[in-house]
Figure 1 (cartoon, rainbow, N blue to C red):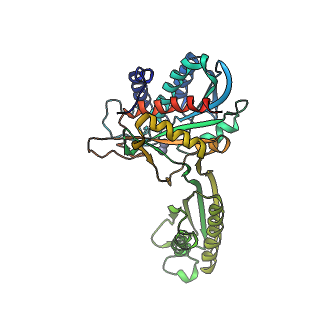
Figure 2 (cartoon, rainbow, N blue to C red):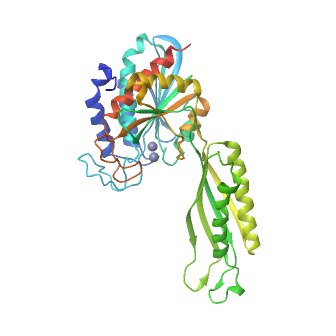
Figure 3 (cartoon, rainbow, N blue to C red):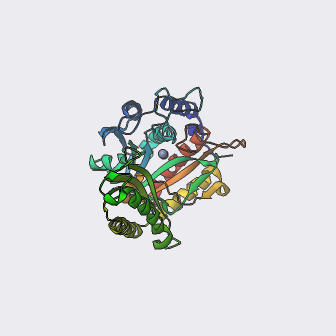
Length: 392
Ligand SMILES: [Zn+2]
Ligand SMILES: [Zn+2]
């Protein structure tokens, strides 16, 4: 059984009620006005100095301890996804087309509960608490927006923690990993230009469709032939737009896709290879091509020292045998921007069912968590914050 302190235990009912309230009122990235309002109101009532409107809908709360010391940052994301919920839960989304299908409702409720428990310590605390409630994680632009609005100005945190629920591991476990845990993400845009014409007379046209098909095939060699076999990378073409009718060769083909990897040098090489391959194949087939890329977020890199501390804390909460050494994920999270500035550990709290029924994965319309994970996540955040403030 997990080791949950009476002070966290006492807040569980409120925490579950809050999570269900947020679940019923999901808000998409940069539209989290109700959620941000709930967060700000609760933090103010606990005595935190609150800043709102950071990166549109982000909220921070700062609480000075009774004695000077370090500052610990605890971050939660608050946004939902554009999914129509199909769980049938009594607390299902009341907003058509929006759903907390990634557990950010639980992250918000856990962080607020941790803020409450830790606020009671504040007079005796050596050091300061800094909570970050970040919008628009799902579109990977909330963290840079908050930083651009000066979210960390005048705070300079020493250590940071965040948790994400994870249905792939059972409730009662915590996954911790040092180093790379989530990939960088680039959004790619490729346009192949030919010259349109009659579908029956391809020799009088320059067909961008055939060129685009070969571009897509050739791009498969970037990971298989140009990436060192022991370095992970993903390149996916996910959207293809061309043409208007069965008998018209179009002028252009447009594609989008994504590039994910852990290593900044590998990313630079792959982007250069992408450009070379697309332009080269297009040119061989008499077309021209342009490639654009939008760098969404760097890889999430967990600091080794902070992760060692987090691993100890996790073992204290769930037992050393329930601390899972997690594989790196090819998903991305813009918490990376905070981790670039503050040594941090992003941990995954097991939220999967333990009754043998498979849990739906994140971003699925049937996603739900085993809510008992929330006491574990809160206990982890509280203990991690205290431990980080005690380190010299
Ligand atoms: Zn997500
Ligand atoms: Zn998420």
